[in-house]
Each structure stands twice: as C-alpha cells, then as structure tokens.
Length: 71
Image (cartoon, rainbow, N blue to C red; front, side, top):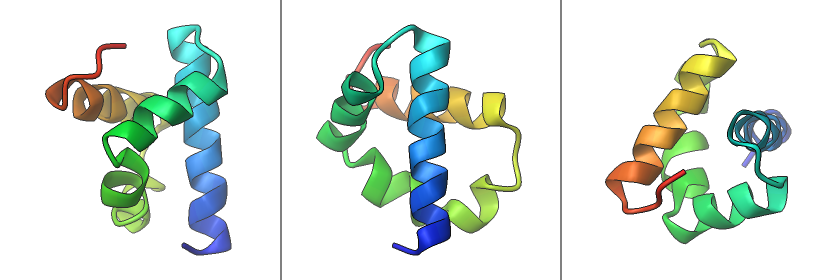
C-alpha cells in the first residue's frame, strides 16, 4: 500500500463514518471484516480516487451490503 492509497483509505473511512453517523473505528471494522480495504479500495485506488466522495461512499455501501454487512 502506498502513502497515497493509505491516505485515500483513511479519508474514505471518515467519509463513510460521517455519512452513516458511525464512528470511524466501526466503519473500519466493518470494512476489515469483508476485506473491503485490501480487496476493493487499495486495488482500485487509481480509478476510485478520481471519482467523487459520495459516489465512492455508495460503492463501499454496496460492497458491504453484498457481503452481508448492512449500514
């Protein structure tokens, strides 16, 4: 993971936490439990970081929902 992708992941955790009214630690745990960070955010960083925050938050929500994690 590069410094840029790490910063992106941290930013997205906080963006999701703000949108879903959760603590960032709770969002991180949900993401980790279904490998969202290692299997979705980091591998797709080059594409995702060019998109809007709300779009990515919705993509993360869909990723979590498909894997049984409701937000």
